[in-house]
Length: 290
Length: 341
Ligand SMILES: Nc1ncnc2c1ncn2[C@@H]1O[C@H](COP(=O)(O)OP(=O)(O)OP(=O)(O)O)[C@@H](O)[C@H]1O
Ligand SMILES: [Mg+2]
Image (cartoon, rainbow over all chains, first blue to last red; front, top):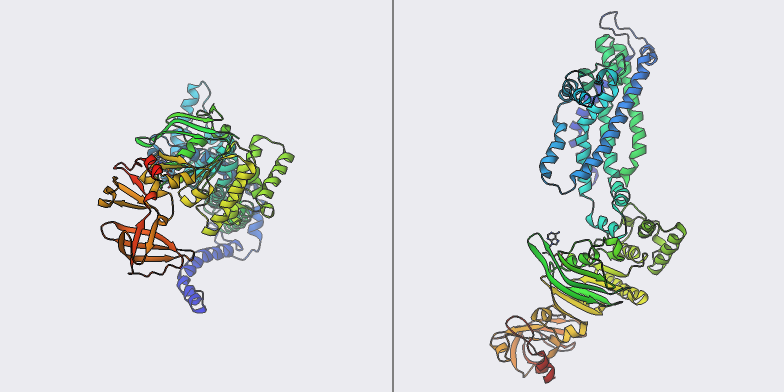
């Protein structure tokens, strides 16, 4: 079927989508790059002259940058760890024939439908609030001092909030994978003398390698640019303790009104995200070929 | 090696009584084949013996020991599944070694045993491949390899050849027969293919709706089917089953006659009919004849018997080889049939 004509037709048919996608991505990227080499401050209109790498130097030498970089990685890593581990656990539970399984599944999936801003606000005001929060009440019940989560452990709090939102995604993908595991394979392992733990380690886990890789790749893409949760809870603080790269760029642009260095930050973030994506593809993408 | 016995074993899934009650003795070193139509409970029975399914009541004995409450691995049996059930992420070597590793056997012994099994099954060249890189027949051999390394007291096969093409099925069948001779281990083999059953079995167990219809050697079943069901199931092409006045003449509700016991002639005989189809196999010719008042009959003739569609032929049954069945489908006066012979 792939004659020259049909290929040309295919290209023609594809072109609107490709052009739209290119325009969507390329134009903002080009503008970002353009601004990143110019002095463009909203509060000091000086004619936007070309300044070379100065914006980059300014952004990269900012002590907040390194901190934001570490925070970004910690956020991504922490959320991935929790969602994958808890996701496997939940998927295993939901795969069991329990009473009311349908309803339990709906409940488990529901956090995914809550908007990040809403869920973050709920967590902030109803769970993590040191005076009225559920967690404070629980701590009090156990005779422990209440923790002001967002002030004392801002990054950990964010990891918990974001992980709560992404757990259904991981669980759902891993559950469908579990259900596609051949029952005869498990029975064969049972006949071969593998106990429940050995079956999990030698049969179930290898079977989950591929969906886990998918979960990690997809989540990383989204987790690198977490913003809403930070904005409505900690605002990046205290200090820069919960500022990630996306939030740093935002604060440069819209709190300090320095579009030039924010653009430089954006460009840096794009480069970093690509490096991370490449690394991940190398690490977990291997599972996808199998 | 061990004999296996079932005592009053029954199995129900919820309200559905799949196996009402079965008593069965399988001798040490015997190759027993379970046959029956689809859905008759063959796999369920095998899984009960394996321990993958819990019996609703009754006992499973291996070597006289009650194993009904034991986990599958503790029964010392090996099973080969219809879908092979190989572990897809492990190499052939690791697949075969898996049961030994689970026993906690040391590395050197495992390697030796895997090499032995690979040699027996001609798998040496494939040890480092993954299951998906193998053909169906090779996968089946790996599954058998995984079953033999742990030196079980008995092998269980659940339709192991049904995913293979006809030629491969014949050669794998011979391979399994060879393995049985070589190891002398008890084997239970499930199939719905009566040719496989006839060629492999020491004894055949014919199942119907979860009940044992008849147990016996292939020839016993062929010569003396205890019921109409067995008569129709064993033998290819099927036995001709005749009902109505023709059967009543022999004092039965149904009479059966095998195709080779009908004598064909082009000028005289008991029944006259028209040929609806002639299958020329070379050595034999199977002639399908429509006989008025009797029905469609199949008869075997010599390979050079010359008939064509629409031709007129005469059929004469060999009275001594008639099987008589009563209204329930039970064989009546089997002794009488013997007596006449
Ligand atoms: N887990 C189960 N739950 C409910 N019913 C079942 C279950 N497993 C089997 N059955 C029923 O038990 C009956 C026997 O099934 P079984 O698998 O033993 O048949 P079989 O003789 O192996 O057939 P086939 O030749 O098609 O493999 C069938 O009617 C089936 O519907
Ligand atoms: Mg079956």
